[in-house]
Length: 237
Image 1: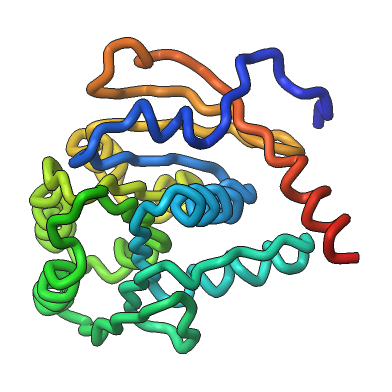
Image 2 (image 1 turned 90 degrees about the horizontal axis):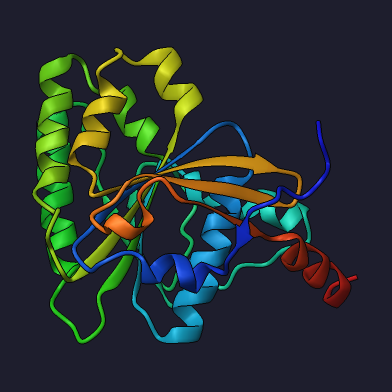
């Protein structure tokens, strides 16, 4: 693997957020990497420092797994301000946790989720950032294409809800290997912004495949997190 830092423009996370409008649904595609872990860290720090409400959809203890990985790197994440909508799993993480009873019938599950999220994503002065983790796990319970399109319609209803900016992390390796070929293109279709990430040892390169902001379509930027890791380790020997 080439260890050199790629020759692209590097930006901080706040710059990335500024390219996204309230009401957007953003699909962040990644391969097997630590992109989810550091997205969580960046989102948590940004929302805490700027007083932005943070809502995390935690499906089947995905959040717990990411936190464990970060701790092994010597990186701590403050989620005391986060409201977590939790499906399945056993580990409660976050300031407030709203549990959704898992049901094997996707229709019942989606109804339970809609009821829970409507209590949280209420109108406020500042739109919440809604980070969705473990979407692949939800896709796994879809029994057929009809269930998938029910899920798709449920996600589509939130597009344009200006009370939040939704960031969906999706592992392309899992989706492409285990799901029918139309799954990912359909998710990309309803998303307002699609970002493809390619990781390197201390960060990731982000390419905007789709955006409602014409100025960023096709552009590529980098976000480097090497300082986060080294800084946390220096403070916590």
